[in-house]
Length: 534
Image 1 (cartoon, rainbow, N blue to C red):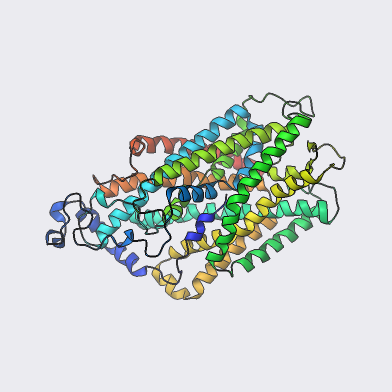
Image 2: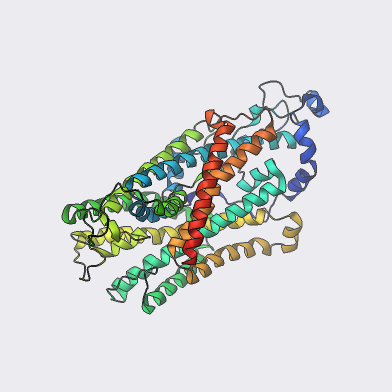
């Protein structure tokens, strides 16, 4: 998935709010009572600065974060574009194979389920951000908390900070571990996707070897060496780009907003041409023993399907960053997030259906690699050893599609690394930051950058990577938002409502989400371990 929104996380790592954190640790237990009990409210709140019913401020300066302070505000339409850009990315390319493996019916149902739970989690994240802001402002200004303060402002609040406000250090550690697992898996997938695609193109056009360089399918030594060289090349590109300022990297993101839809349109055109000339490979498999029933249900494909769709539709964790610049009030933030997720879900289902129908049993784990066998009459079967016949139009489609994940990874990787290292470094205790000094941010950035390349070099299997990402994505889609919902409402007491609250805020939906997530997670973990053993 693309990470344009990470460009918003440009906070100076050398300026942590350590004083605030230490103060919060000392006073959290007592403020949890006084903020909601009028009888225990501080004396300052009963003076001329008192908060009247329905008032946000009294005379306390708690509206500072409602001033954009130089931030370029975004309209609802612009914010929708940013959210779509963050959701629809390369994570999608692992989904079509799971459609073929699980059958069309189960796949569509599971994608809808993951989409709905992702939408539910996104709503809870927006509620959590608003409650955290309201509760924290009341504490910092020593006034009585009320639900009118629970609003989404221009203050950037990371997931680890929300967890800390609601559940202290234990909550922050929990969010930190889950976000770290997902971030590591995402960067690992980025490196593998880039190296796999570039190695395939190099083998075909630069080295002149017609062999399909698919790193997961018993690759030759030449293919493995080419893959490793591509990993090294990607590492050099990333190191160079990380020396650039974030605002310059944002230029790449504007380009990819357009390129993404051009690439997906090229995929659609390629499939239509192949279906017209060759028919649907799913309906006429090369081996008669293979089922051609598109509506078969194969539960064995569930873990891969669940992991791939969870990874592809996961965006709730990124919404605080994405929607922070939205215009004052942010009344439409929930509608923007829901519309973007619904749009992404429809696009994913449509493209996955047509790709799996077109390619059938030839659908690869990383479907982009299928385009290496795209010619003037469409896709050529993997079992066909003949050289693919091409023309200028088929070459344009092939390169537009196959270059998309490569260029996208080059532009996104530094942004993701910057955001992850910022989150990790910000979670350190004040004493640890003091000990590391100015070397701390650089050290964290280097570690976050280096580890995914090591993993991709020695464990290049994209199937394993996607399943790992999917498992951690379940926590970010379901468990972390449910955690915010439960503990946030408990922390705020009767003043828990936000502009984004509704029937979905009821605790029964938290319970349903937790049960569904627990079942899917346990089943997927068992299958993941079995796959690793094999």
